[in-house]
Length: 88
View 1 (cartoon, helix red, strand yellow):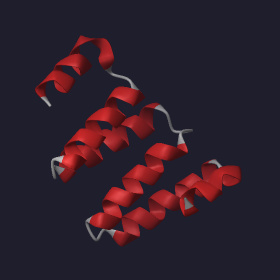
View 2 (cartoon, rainbow, N blue to C red; view 1 turned 120 degrees about the vertical axis):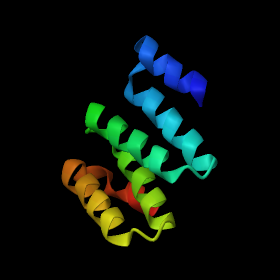
View 3 (cartoon, rainbow, N blue to C red; view 1 turned 45 degrees about the vertical axis):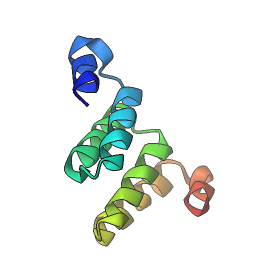
View 4 (cartoon, one colour; view 1 turned 180 degrees about the vertical axis):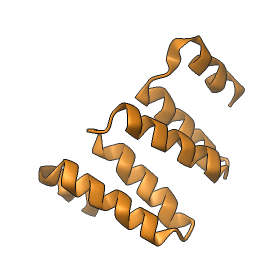
């Protein structure tokens, strides 16, 4: 995790880097950090539905159902033609 954080400070502050960090933190059970990085990835690339879907799945796994629903609703509003990804 420290290497990822160092990469961010050295110019790796990209949506892809935040997605990788979110996945890492989620795999380690560090939900707060994972959510923070999903949110940052979304803020940098709001047109990317996959980040919303992953964030919603993480929120659901934590029992944060209403937040997950709101996140998924944003996916549908941003990319209605990709709503099928929600069923995948």
